[in-house]
Structures are given as C-alpha cells and as structure tokens.
Amino acid sequence: MSATILDGRALSAEIRGELRTEVARFRERQGYPPGLVIVRVGGDAASGVYTKAILRLAGEIGVQARLEELPALTSGDELRALLLQLNGDQRTHGIIVQMPLPAHLSQQMVADTVAPAKDIDGISPGSAGNLFLGLPSFLPSTAAAVVEILDRQRIPLAGKRVVILGRSNVVGKPLALMLLQRNATVSVCHSRTRDLTALTRQADVLIAAVGRPRLVTAEMVRPGAVVIDVGINALPEGGIVGDVDFEAVREVAAAITPTPGGVGPLTNVMLLKQCVRAAWLASGLEEEAPDLSIPQF
Ligand code: NAD
Image (cartoon, rainbow, N blue to C red; front, side):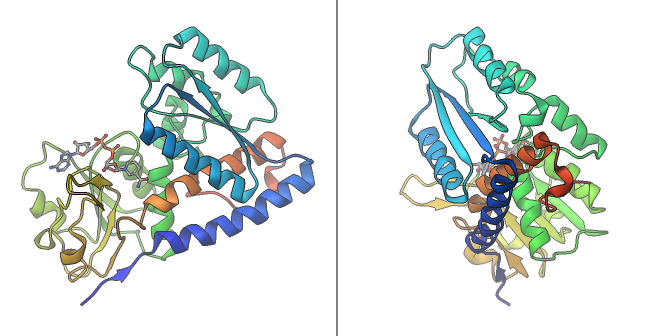
C-alpha cells in the first residue's frame, strides 16, 4: 500500500484563495484592510527569511503588514513601549514578535504585554488558558495547521487514538488539547518516554513534532495510520527532512504529509487566517465574518 500524500501546498493555495476573498470583503465593509505588525529584535538570517515569508503572504492576500525592526540591544522597556503602542493602534489587528528574542529580553514579558485580542499566534497565558478551558481562542499556528490538515482531509478524530511526539508549548501541548476537544484519545510522548514504538504502534493518527531527522521509522507505524510530520530538519549534507522516514513510512501509512510541502506551507497561512479573524472581532462585526475559525470549540 502506498499512502495518500496530504499536500500542504495545495491546501495552502485553497485557504489563501478563501482569505483573499475574505480580506476583500472586510476591506469593502470597513474601508481599510486587516493590519499585521511583525516585531523583530536583532535576529538572524533564518528569522529574516521567516519574516519575509509572512510579509509576502500578507501582501498576497491583501493584509497590510509591516515589519518593526529593532536593534539587538533594545531594552525590555523599549520593546514593551512599542508593544503597548501597537496594542493601542486601531489599524493593527495582529501582533507577532519574532522568536527567539535576544537573551536579555523576556519572552514572558512579551506574552504578557501583547493584547489578548491581537495575540494571533496564541502565545499568551490568556490564549493558552482559553484553549485549556475549551473556550474560543487564538491558537499557536503550527498546531492549528495540523488540525486544519486533518479537518480538510476529513480525517475522523472522535474516538481515535492520537499519539503526539513532542510536548512543546507551540506544537505538542496545544495540539493535545485541540485534539482532546475533538474527542480523540490523546497520548503525548516526549524525550523521557519509554518504549516509544509500543505507543506509536497504537496510533490511528501519529503526529511527530520533535526535531529529529527520520525518528519515526516504518516499524513504529501501525499499518493504515495517518501520519503528520511537523519536524523540519536541515541535514548536514544539505536538504530538509522531517521527523518521519517518509519513503519507508509511506508504504505503511494510509495518509502522510511530506516534508517539505506538508505542515510547513500551512503554518503562516493559519497565522494570517487568525489575523483576519482578529480584524473582524475588533471591528465588532463578528457575525459578518464567515466561519474562519480553526477549531473554535
Ligand atoms: P522543541 O525542541 O521545543 O520540542 C521538541 C519536543 O520533542 C520536546 O517536547 C521533547 O521532549 C521531544 N522529544 C525530544 N526527543 C524525543 C524523542 N526521542 N522522542 C519523543 N519526543 C522527543 O521543538 P518544537 O518547537 O516543538 O519543534 C519541533 C519540530 O517541529 C522541529 O523540527 C521544528 O523545526 C518543527 N517546527 C515546524 C513548524 C512548521 O511550520 N512546520 C513550526 C514549528 C516547529
């Protein structure tokens, strides 16, 4: 058996089309576009590439996005002042602060300062708390991308066994809550989990978000399982692979995301989708908005 390939690029194109229409409608109704600001303090080449990708995507769908680039020596007070100013700016609907920050700046300060209504990547304790309680919330965009793929492919989750590898705050943990809310039976594995294979072999849906090239081998996958690979690993010899041994696992799984071209292309799209939603909510016209919700429970 060769697995169905879950094509993230095709899904991304589909959602981008929906967002273009939605942004045009918002603009017509409000007279201005949804607004996004990316704050970057110092930052390396990789974060520059990431920032450019978001700006390009925003431009493509009609969201007005700009980059606030601060020097690496920016103080906590200066960063906080900028965030407060953006919180008060009516044309800024979503704020993203590029991580990682320089060591002297506190990620927690950022999470506590960005207004909950503009926290479109779901990083704040308030957003995480809402997710925990099953209340509508902005969601970490990578975790949201995984659920979007499962939803759009109509992969049933209720009553299914889902095994997640990785417990980070941006992927594994929020994903576990989102899938629990979908009535899946969820196990979360991590670096201290023993006998990983015994657990992964039970999975109807196996999600790898670890950051280790080809950690998941064919023997770890139950025949017929759905496999979602979040990992992005640069190989020393060049090239990018996921956490899943794609060529071997595709012979066992029923469906699988490739890397690249799986979860990756959807992550920024989910961020922009949440920005458009934030704009509708801020305008007080939520009922005008189509259901843009990524699993709003
Ligand atoms: P992280 O380093 O914060 O977390 C990794 C997790 O893996 C930890 O919870 C750790 O306990 C667990 N882990 C480590 N070794 C393990 C093992 N042998 N078995 C099971 N679990 C183990 O990483 P992250 O930020 O969650 O990212 C994970 C991967 O996803 C990385 O490759 C990253 O590049 C990728 N990623 C992709 C996107 C995307 O857009 N597709 C976005 C974010 C992260």
